[in-house]
Length: 210
Image (cartoon, rainbow, N blue to C red; front, side):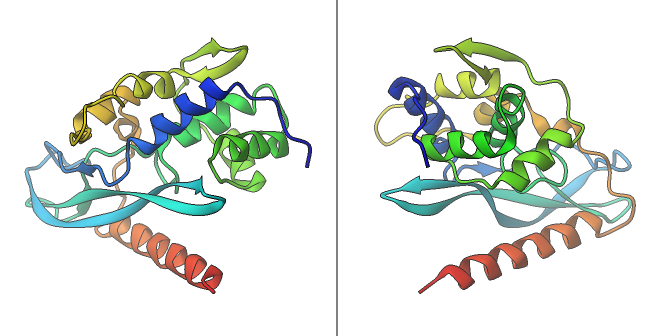
């Protein structure tokens, strides 16, 4: 495959913006998204945010998202998190797929992201491009249209040695994507969907293990 010409500084910006989420905890929710009732802590789930290429090998990058149980209607819901509804990649990755695919074919978008260090397949890029999401603010950087979420995240990556980005900072930088999440239409829906997602991801990585 022909190597694409990508400015090294652009690679650094995107990689640092995505990597800042590694093992970040998201544990804030004020009320139930379905009925507005008060919520109490339920448990915490690990969710895959992205797959990065490190030393030539795919490496899953995970976040931890707290779940809450509504005291009024009983549904189990997630904390405010950096994911759009029903997506298996963090919102900055989705933003990159949608923004880049505005100016290049889906297969080229996937190849472009792979050279940056983000592993995602052409079919997923196409799926995100055809989905309905809130408008993504963009800016031009090194002649490439990038989502502002990625540029904003790059500004909070220099947190000092030994320090970590907190969930609220990361959510604010990436535009608080879970605010557009629709309420679950029945108790347990969010829980069941995410359990199926986790099982499928586990089977996928087990099949790739030597």
